[in-house]
Image (cartoon, rainbow, N blue to C red; front, side, top):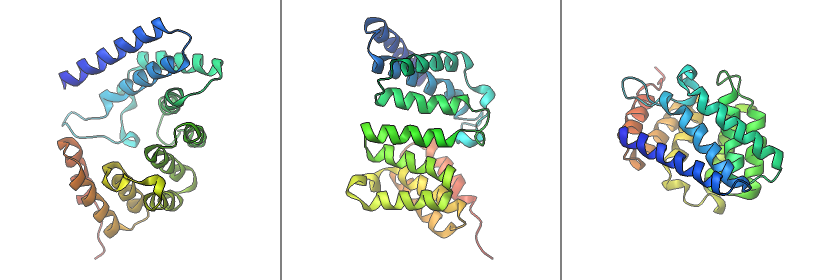
Length: 214
């Protein structure tokens, strides 16, 4: 929407201003890089029909290469300082994604290594969930699901039961493992927890696309 575009543009403007005012603060540079690399992918996140498009299926030619190049340059600037913080590490993760020519060609081991560093500095349930999803790309869906399920039962994962991306992650991993009945339950729980119409339409589509045994 135009409102979201305006908001993102203003956030990036303020990020540039912050870097200008605090050029020696690595986390300010990391935050700007993170915003640029996130914004660069936004044109591909929704298709012409207004439907949500997963990272694996996005048309990468629609990504904004100028923003990606700027973001990558800022990440390299951060790396030279060798004082990594949470924003810089999140930006570095996004840099790995935006550097890959395709989802399959993503350096997932590097993504996991960066999440390991992020966990050491900002050990939140959301970071742990994202790390588990990345591990699934390296070690397989079964390992990823084990980490997700373990996280959901630990004190560290408190609050994830009410976090719809947690159930989406479980649903996608269960889907990959052919456990479609359980995947359906996870999609349905995610639907209960999100009020975003675009996300709800996407989840209904994923749910409808499950293959049931004859």
